[in-house]
Image 1 (cartoon, rainbow, N blue to C red):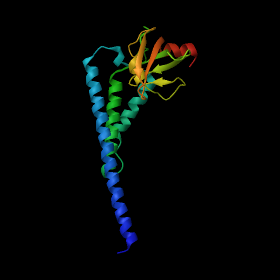
Image 2 (tube, one colour):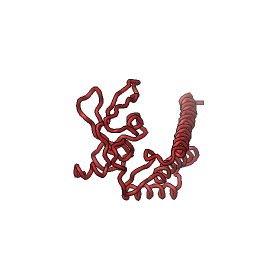
Image 3 (cartoon, rainbow, N blue to C red):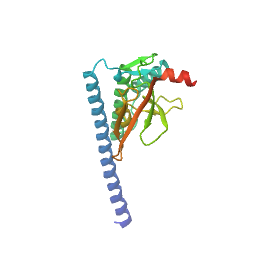
Image 4 (spheres, rainbow, N blue to C red):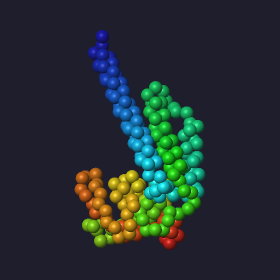
Length: 198
């Protein structure tokens, strides 16, 4: 047998094995993400009535997310074998995320202007090592605008959620360092957008 052909067959077998391993790892990550979403949903259901679990959406954002959900439910997964399974799991995870967001949504209203950091609020903060302030939306990215967006599930978002104006909180960054941040102001996005003309 030709040594080059033998080498190519062995290399092909190795590549198939590597692909199978990567597909299994990716499937495991998809299952872990789905399990995390289910745990978060159960935790939220235990804390009913909290405005922190409310998602404040414009009518346009609600319609766009509803359309995305309908499209995901109607779509057929392309590909074959394990690629199809991965696509189905990815789609199921996104469907679960969208269903959760839309179930918690308050549409067309601003969050209460009570100075408490929660999703839908524009936060102005000061980090202890910086005399300047930073302003961003605590929420979920919604395509438009030039305002920076931090997820409530990010380390900074988790630290600030529930904080009142003037309150300082600490959080751990990926490098392991602890950062102190003070909430200077928290206003509903609609109020901020009207005041800045955005």
